[in-house]
Length: 219
Image (cartoon, rainbow, N blue to C red; front, side):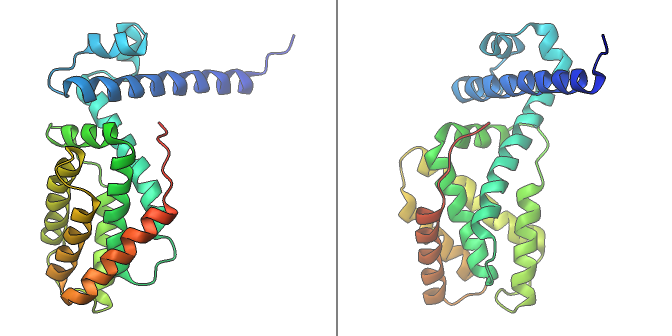
């Protein structure tokens, strides 16, 4: 009987992908409950229903698992944000949509929001997808004369630092999404827009995300 090596290889790859996904899903739940510093390999393998050997086949260390989970979260966020900002012609609106979309996602899937915050506090390497997206929008805005020129790292730190603090407030229910609307207004003003225009753009972005972003948690 002829063996279809390509089909066998494809089936093996699918099994590996499913096991890896199961480990990432388990890590998401464990880290949400215990935090990255308190979670152990035993916790991950118990939650995933696999052996320690299987765990190490995919992730040689816990740090490798955290890096993979961080990458997956960033890719998920970036996909949704890319969809909501596609076709936008004003970079200021694009930036506002980026922030509002991120908050829509974490309020619909708070576990992922908390895990992203907790991983940020570890030594896991930062994923560059969202930073790259921000840099492109900010550079476009400066080129169009919408924002004042600034060092990209400083502009990015201003946004990301404010967003992380606000994310903790929103996830803790100490603030709602109207808080985010004002935050985006302040950020756009800091980048160079007039306050009235910044407020209107932030409001438009919030409404667009509410109407068009229908996020379903998918690992």
